[in-house]
Image (cartoon, rainbow over all chains, first blue to last red; front, side, top):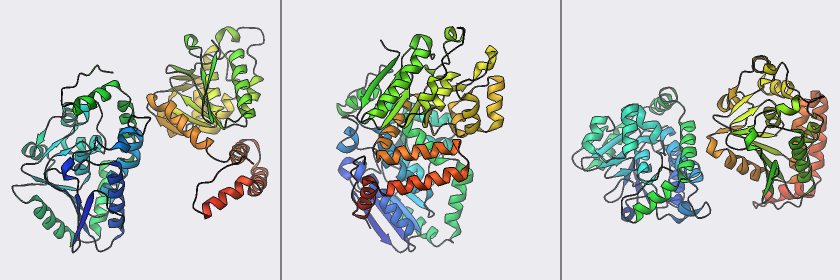
Amino acid sequence: MNDLVDHRLERDGAVATIVFDRPAAYNAVTGAMLLSLKATMKALARDREVRAIVLTGAGKAFCAGQALDDAQTMSEGNGRPDLLRAVMERFNPLVIAIATIEKPVIAAVNGVAAGAGMGIALAADFRFVAASASFTTAFAKIGLVPDSGVSFFLPRMVGYARALELTLLSEKIDAARANELGLVTRLCADDVLAQAQAFATTLARGPRSLGLIKRELIQNGLGDLRAALTYEAQLQAIAGDSADFIEGISAFREKRQPHFCGE
Amino acid sequence: MSDLIAEQHGLVRLLRLNRPARLNALTDGLATEIAAALEAADGDETRAVVLTGDERAFAAGADIGELAQPGGPQLEVWDRIWNARVPIVGAVRGLALGGGLELAMSCDVLVVAEDARLGQPEIKLGLMPGAGGTQRLTRALGKALAMEMVLTAREIDGREAYARGLAGACVPAELVLRTALALAQTIAAQAPLAIQAAKRAVNDAFELPLASALGRERSAFRELLETDDGREGIAAFTEKRRPTWSGK
């Protein structure tokens, strides 16, 4: 097993639970954390004892998406973020690992799932959602486009028109609304993690064919995930070159409203 | 201002066609400048070239004024372009028509914009392609589509060019140059003798019968094994370190 960066791995019988563990930063992901999570997923894919996986966040949040304090990602392109590289090399491999591992993956969404954090939750096969949790696509707020599979999974779950509305407006989607939209497997009034783990334990007793069913649905039901993720990365690179992205991120840091010029 | 602008990016030379008012239509003068620039790159430290136009056009064909002159354009200069030893990455945005597509197909690796427009419209002038179009298009796309494009002037977009194997990469227009430069940097970082020999060997596939081309491939491979860089590459792999190329 790799040295786990900013996440913990807990085992209970055939169920492995990955806990995003940067609670002070609402579990926002750094480049090193993403690569480490991908390595953990790969190890779990090979581990025959593990037959179901739960993803959750430590503390109040599920995952707040890209960490804006991650020096590597925020400055590797001559002082600006190289978003093509960040998305292609770090976010996409994790999303692909979650979506293609032939074991059920249950997101126990304990709190806010924003941006790429929402992508990770959507890439999972099931979403157990705490009543106090919420989702937001977040990207447009800082002049970016949805990545981490959000543009792929969201329209397939809620329909094109609502997906466009949710991504263009980037409004907060509370757990009740997420449930109405069809994003939620089970709305949990209390102890979302325990409920997700109990569900995972049930699935972990299932046959080998569960993994094959997941593969079948991805292949036949969802279309070309990899091509979609590549396209997200390319459009993110274009958005990342815009003046509005710089304004968006400055406004976010300065906790003020951004003034976008449309360029 | 020259019709061809050269910029050096480390080991990569970027060549931009610069006749924006004429959508980079090719003149004898511009074709000669391109040939000379490639020969210059062959003679210096440059390890890969990126050839591009601007957002509106890679090159929109031959200059109509020169087509009308007695004897027409100077086609022999194209042999010099095709004989370049340096690998050329074409970066196509907008129009690549007629001589423009022929120039794009003269590149070794092609990156196209999704919405690039590629075609051989010479038939509409009562003419046909004269700088490789009928041959290179057919070899890249197969007879049926090439014939349709040449006989009807049908254009294909970048997505279709990629799907049919004419281009190695298809990306949003805004990323074409960046993608092409990154590819060129990757090529430029390899051992120079191996790159040149490999380019020649792949091109042999279009020039020679299979048995001769396989024979040449085998000799080229054996020669590379005896080069300093061939030995360095194997040693570096074994020692799990990055190789340092001497170009020998």
